[in-house]
Length: 377
Image (cartoon, rainbow, N blue to C red; front, top):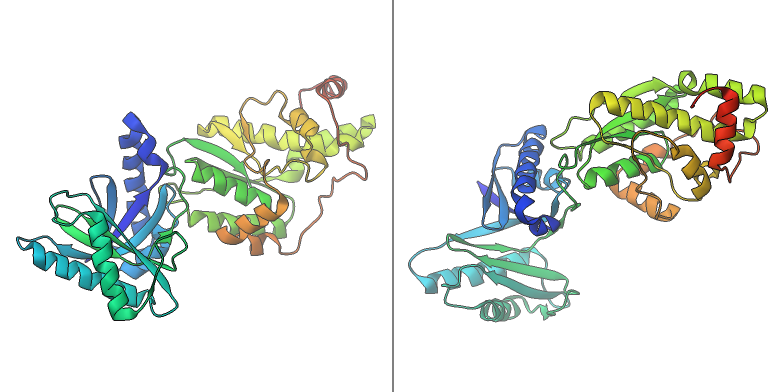
């Protein structure tokens, strides 16, 4: 059974609530192992979390998708005994071995960073760094670089029960454990933006309920495929997509708009109909908010003025995590998450798109139209 060291970031700042956040994180880690058919134990020692498993390499990739973790490292353990000199020799030898495996050689820079949690250990951290670093230079002739620009970092953690040495740090998404902020309905289209918006709110602890409004089979399949990608990050919460008819949701209102000569308002009223239905679903399923992939100024319905009009009177908060992103940032995030290639399959144009959609609607105009429609659509 090998050991994986798990690191969390902002959870350490949670004060009296930290126990709740860490309990949820441990629960999600266990769900991750189960979902991937892995046997293992999740446990805490001090301010650290660990996974002990026989399938270390198989566990690293899924664990690196667990929200709340900032990084993880497979570690080698040196059990503490009664002979400090033997412990030091074993520590140095393991640092050299880890550096060799990490590719340290002439022209490859390295540093040793140690953390001495057990103050009874006879060497302080700088002495551990120096002793191990000298051995690595002697054995491998690597270049010492004590800055963050070093090619390889060899980590050492000295605890009362064991000494841990690692030469690999695998980044994880950070954020908060999934589920600590409750539920939110996430509108998922077949495009690039909405899966990224959902992922970002999952990263902030929201358990999402995916909602897709189907306009054609191809776009619906893209949405469902992207939800499957998001499922790979949704440890501790089962994603159960809801699919409704786009035409049935918006067509009656849009036909009445056309009859009154307000075709330019179609996009705004379409979005309002979708958000209203999402709010209904949120109320039914105990969700606190609705998540949308709006990106400020990207299309006519996403100007700041129109966002105000679309949100006006909605009974649930509308979360729009992409407002401050530019399009290239969203694309890069989609690539990293794994949704970009799915989202960029053949795109279908909305059949209700007007030739000249309004770009600067006002609440006053909205209320006037609503009065003529005789509803609060």
